[in-house]
Image (tube, rainbow, N blue to C red; front, side):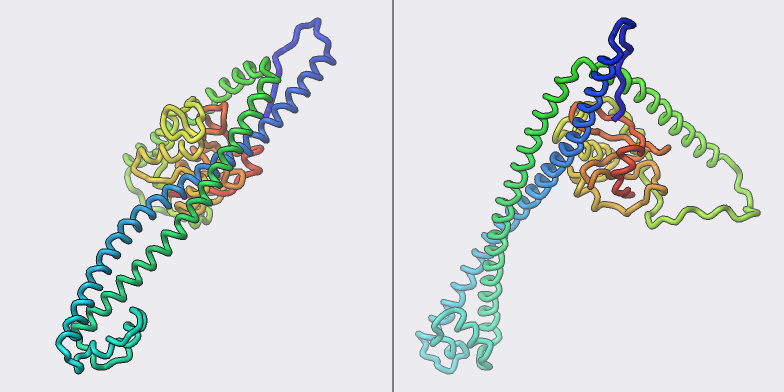
Length: 353
């Protein structure tokens, strides 16, 4: 993270200035490392939340299904019991189910059914219904047992991630407090840089729109020479370049841990919200978002592609020109950054939706 101090007065001790600048540089380096760790912890929390919501949904569905299966099993057992009573009271020892009356358990009865050739088709249907509903009840009970165990584990992971986030936020506040005087200048420098990056991005978008208009008006002419081959890519053509314009509406929106609305975003919440505006649903987790779309290399990125960094702990939207828009970390805002320096060294990959 680059750092510069305001010009000191002519009477200031150069040694003191150099010492303070070195101290501030060191602190900003610590904050940058902390921001990276903090973002990973926040995205781990988001991923645990995605898992927890999925588990809750599965638990709800399977609880309803278990209730239905138990009801069906009770009904099938009543039918079987009534049929056995009829056979017993009629004294018809030639009836197919008579061979089952000596069974010591339901499992024994079902086993005898499979071995007997005298059981009528109607009685077989009743017995098989009992067996099927019984297996479903057992399956649902086992699923719910595992789901509850997974829920306990995910809740523990989520709580641990939350504790880590809160601890690191405290460290970050303390570090920032130690160089409070330099922060204002840093913000001025970054604001000027962001204004320039925004102008460049808007000019690039305007040029692309102009090129598209010209291409639609130009007459079709036969191709007389083969064009240069495009770089190889396994990803399909980009379809969502239009999200760049939507994303840029939120420049300056503050980073908010867990945020996914214009009042504040974290990195994956920002990507999720922007794509939701064009009807594309994504989970609120950079780790989970990486599983969507097709892989695309750094050299083949196109506007609208997702770009991932720092072991999937951070995500943004590529806007062209080697830049991307994202919600970086606590204390920052939605901004444009170049895929260079730290971002280049920690680039994991792109995904095209």
